[in-house]
Length: 238
Length: 238
DNA sequence: GCGCGCCAAAAAATCGATCATTTGCGCCCT
DNA sequence: AGGGCGCAAATGATCGATTTTTTGGCGCGC
Image (tube, rainbow over all chains, first blue to last red):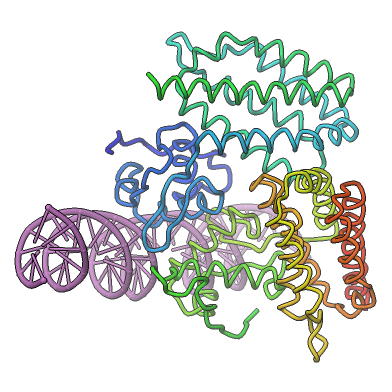
């Protein structure tokens, strides 16, 4: 399955002190492509193809794949190479379930521990999100919106007091996004008043109303999951 | 800091179909050494030293380190190499906190979802653990015990319904173990009646008493953390 | 004495080539 | 026709050499 070559994304932090490694750039590029749905579940990741596609040697690619396999986005099969991790309806259900479970403990923790700086981060993230259109004029999802949506969700949980839980949450968010990107029918989701859900969420959070925040957030997450599955179903059917 | 060379551990699954990759073997070996406290926090992992130590070329080592860095046990600093992840008192506190938080959601889930097979796994794990001496005759910790202790803890949570949560829990367990291995004063911990704690835990679990199981488990975990910190304190002081 | 820049040594990162394993195909035998 | 068998191509894994970057020390000037 040949695809257009693409230049490696610009370094995360511009060459302030040290330049990024080719392996790190490849890592981010491939990760992006997996989450973005360019590389699909069960697809074999041939070193040679990737090497050519990202314009590097084999070593950086392999190192990138090794990281991704430790992370779970890629599966390594010793002596047989690397495959993009599966992601079906069942997997998404597990992701959603896990997110909701985590919210039950992370939100209360964040609400009780969060200081002013955290509150401001949430408010700011929400402000940025609110003023960003979810879709571009051509109807495709707006990357800025996606980034800000992620930041908004991470910000809410940020004060939970556990980097471990934050890390999983981030991964779970990415997997949700990945499923959505595979689903394609973004327009279906558009009818939903997500902005309103976010508004209410912020309100509950600023009021430090844990129960309400949890309920709102989990409803938000479950609805996202439901729509994504419905959306993909359509894609499969038609 | 020179150390004895060591042969790579035997393959995880014997050469049934495919042999393990050198990179995978190195990964397990280095991981073991980090958790085992042989490689200490903040230590630089020089490719050359590791290459010689594990008797391979540089590539497998680098791939192993890349996996470990994605996993968090190792930090990669682009262009500067790899360092063993920090692990101080604060980090352990966060680990313990996270474990307890997770137990609050995982145990109830497991108790409500766990079927007979799960129950049997727990019982068996407990049986194996109970009949294994925690220390060897020379006073050092018994590796079999460590493995079975881990299996016991994982078994209890196994039915929670989320591989994601299980994965973090496993990592958190390893980090706790790692701290203990760095602490060294295993004898201090020996005075504690851990077996009894495990017995009670199993009882509560078989009775499907969520609240009691959580309280027992978290007390167990917190006590472990407390002792580990106290133990390391002694090491530093004297 | 202290900071700064320069150079050499050390180390990491990357490449290209080689070795090992798996995959796929075609052939032969039953 | 079907089921191995074995070889050749494809692909992954690993090595050794090369390139790039960082580190550490030394001398110079302030």
